[in-house]
Image (cartoon, rainbow, N blue to C red; front, side):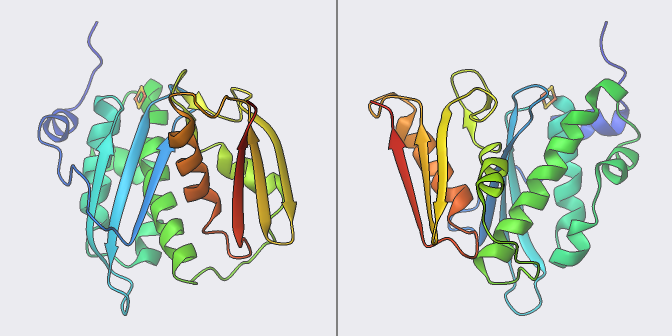
Length: 211
Ligand code: FES
C-alpha cells in the first residue's frame, strides 16, 4: 500500500529545491540516521558579516520524506541568519509539507539534523562557539556516531569499528578496527578528521587502523 503523502510532499520529492553540492562551501555536514542507515549532506555559504545563509544545498541518500524535508528546510533556511535557521524544526518542516506519515518522522529529523550539524560546523570553523566544553572521550564518541560505516549503513560506533579513543593535550587518537588497506579506510579516516578537527581545543587528530 503506498504511503499517504500529501501533494506538497510529492511536489518537493519530484522537484526538490537546492539539491546538489556547493564547491568550496563555508561549512558542510554529513549526517546518518541510526533508524534507517540513510544519509544526508548539507552545504552552506554564509555571509561572514551578517551570518546570513547566502546559499544552501543538500544531497540526500534517503527516501521521499527525507528529500521533501531537505527541500523545504533549505528553502526556509536560505536568507535566514544562522541563529534563525537553528530554530527550524522537523515539526515546522512537517507542517509546511502538509504532514508526513508518523513512521517517517525520523526522515525529517535526519534532514533537520543535517542542517543543524552544518550550522554547528560553520560556528566551530569560525570561532563562533560560545559554550566551550573540553573535548573528552565521550565528546569524541558522540561525534563518531555521525561517521557512517558504509559496509552496513550504520555509524562506526554502533557497528563496533571504533576500537579505542584517547584524548591527550589536544591530540585525539582514534583506533579503527579495520585494516588500513580496506576499501573504505581512507573514506572513514577523512570523515573522522572532518568531524573531530573543528573541535575548538583539538590540535591534532591521529587515526590508526588495526592491521
Ligand atoms: Fe531513511 Fe527515510 S527511510 S530517510
